[in-house]
Length: 164
Image (cartoon, rainbow, N blue to C red; front, side, top):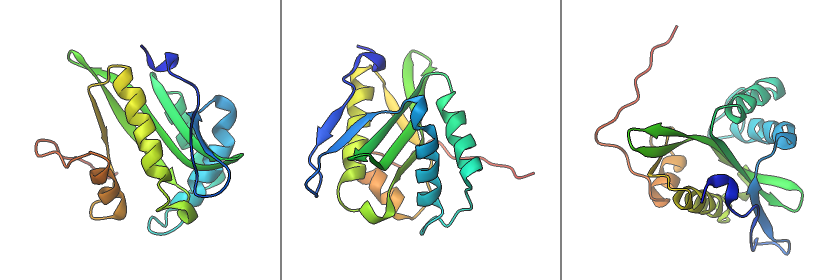
């Protein structure tokens, strides 16, 4: 079963009275996702400098990557979390790179991120994905979240960078 053949919506109970829904991102979601993304990453602990335009461009780039998969968690009509990434061939396996993942600051600790990550894991496993990987800031709550979600710090790989 491919990623495109999986169920479209995954409801689970929110801490409020309205159920939370996890569904695939569609192109019409881009602007709302970009505004949400900027709000989350411009807040602590990230304190980044995203604008409406730069966040829209970042997420548009993600959405236009071949083999893109994006999921959003909604509480009613409000986006409360998102996950953006893509799959790629690596030798005889398929791997998924999680490019962006965030939860509304006010909703962190409610299990929304865990539910979204579990929904993503389920879709990837059902589609035959062999591995998922991501980059995040070292020694942060995000690192702890990913470890709790089954990720590990790779003993064989490092991130290499060069500034211009």
